[in-house]
Length: 391
Image (cartoon, rainbow, N blue to C red):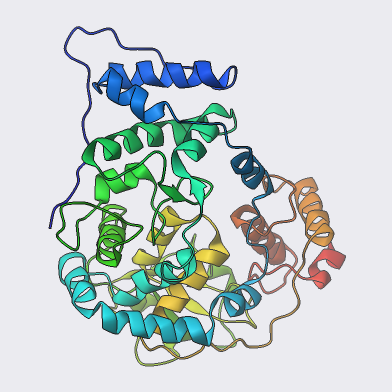
C-alpha cells in the first residue's frame, strides 16, 4: 500500500514568489498567471505549461454551478428517493465482492463498511456515474470565476502534483462539475492528502479502482476526525413527555444522561453510556427519531446538507442491518413561499435565520425552536402551517 502525501512544493530559498493572479479578466492571462504561481511553488515551468496548456473555460461548468440546488425535500421524502431496494441489494453485493478491502478499512481506520458503501452509492451509484466534466477545465473555470476562487485555486495545483505522479491526465480525467473525481468523488487536494493505493499497483486511481477509492475515502474520513470503531447514528424511541427543546445538534448529553430522560434504542441497545450524543428529529416530534454520536458530525465535513447527511448516515445503518425507520405521522412542513414567509416573520421578531431563501437550514430550525418555546408550543424545531398562522 502506498499513501500519497501532500507534496510541499516550495520555491528555493530566496526565490521571488509569484503573486496570486486575480480572478476574472482575460482567461488566457489568468492561466498564464497560474503557470507563474506553479513555478513559484516549485513546479517546473515546462511541466506547468504542459499541464495547463489545454485548459479551456467551460461554460457547462458555469451553468451547472448556477443551477445547483439545495436538498429541499424533507427527510422522509428525500431518503425514500435515494434509498431503493436495488441500492441495498447492490451494496450487499459490493460488500461481499470487496470483503477483504472493507476488513482492512475496519482494522486500520475503524470505519464500518456501511459508511463507505452509502457514500459510494449516493455519490456515483457504486461507480456507475462519475461525471463527464473535464476536471482541469472545471477547476480552472471555477477558480477564474470570482464567486469562490479560494476554494478551487488550490485544487489546480494539487491536480498538477497528481499529474507529476502520473495519476492525472489533463486531457482525459473527468468527474463532477465542481472538480470531484472518482467513485467516492474526492477533490484533487483530498486525493493528495488522503489517496491510498489500495490495490498495490503504484498509483491512486479513484475512477477505476474500487480498492483505491474505498481506502482513500476511509483515510479522508479518518483525517476529518472519524473516531475509530464508534457508532454514528441510531434510531430511538422517546417518551411522550420528553422535553423537545433539548433536541437538535446544539444540545449534547452523554448517552447515560439521555437514558435517564427516557431515550431508548428502537432496536437493540444504545451505545457506550459515556459517549456524547444529540437527539435529532428531522420532521419534528411525530416523525423519525435518531440519536447522533460524535462520528455523525464528521459527515458535515463531507457534505453541508443536513438532509443529505442524515440520509447517508441512516442508509449506512441499513447496510449494517438496521430496520427501516419508523416514519411516524409528522405534520406537513412548509416549503417555498410559505417557508420564506416564516423566515421573514422570524426575522422581524429578531431571529437570525440567514438569507430568506425558503430553505430549512440550521438557522431557521434554531429560530423555530426558540419561537415555539416562546409561544408555549412543543419546541421540536419543525415549522408547520399552524406555527406560521400563530406568527
